[in-house]
Image 1 (cartoon, rainbow, N blue to C red):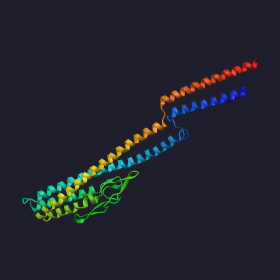
Image 2 (image 1 turned 120 degrees about the vertical axis):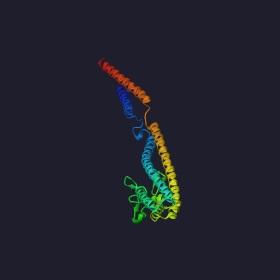
Image 3 (image 1 turned 180 degrees about the horizontal axis):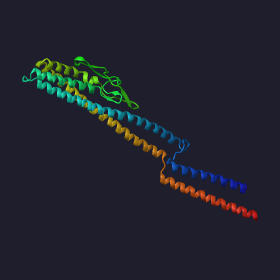
Image 4 (image 1 turned 45 degrees about the horizontal axis):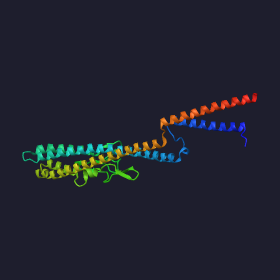
Length: 295
């Protein structure tokens, strides 16, 4: 079959347009830094990339939650350390006032100190982080401790604390309840009130008896400090894992969707040269056609 000049021209133009499209695509890839500009370029890579982006966003949300828990853990550590210091002070007072060299006046004065310690412990128990009462258990918007007449203390929170997702299938407790810290096993406030009453009544046996409760309170507080230390360490490990996972995701996404800039520029230059060569060839052919026509 005879190939006419018009057919040659049409084929040439079609190829020229195709190469021009490749040049434009290569230029866009360099400008965007992406080798997959639309899902049709690489459906598998595009789909995987979308899935990884979703995981990355979820990880960022989990990291925000974990960082809040870490901050919360720091508040707990400070608060419970303060509790331990106050209980240590109360124990020192009890030991001193249990001595036979003390009298009713000094013991009554010490009772005022114990009142102050109870008040400070209630303040610690009502610690807030933002709008959250950290020792209220699940009732985070409720003031957890009420100081009553006679220096009894009422706990208004819950025994349990809420849990939050830190991964798709993993939950972590959001702290420790005031019931566990102050009330359960050994009621710190009851121990201190009994000591206060014994001091006011100049009851030496009552003062000495309070030491057992104070020792139990200190032991419980040390256990809770250890728990919070482990809790914060665990949260930090989760955060570290999430940050490492974020970097891994970024690397995989980049390998699938991002261009190798050196390779992309080389490809762009090759396509540009080919396009310019075709333009030159097309111009030469057109010139020859004109000459042939003139002949």
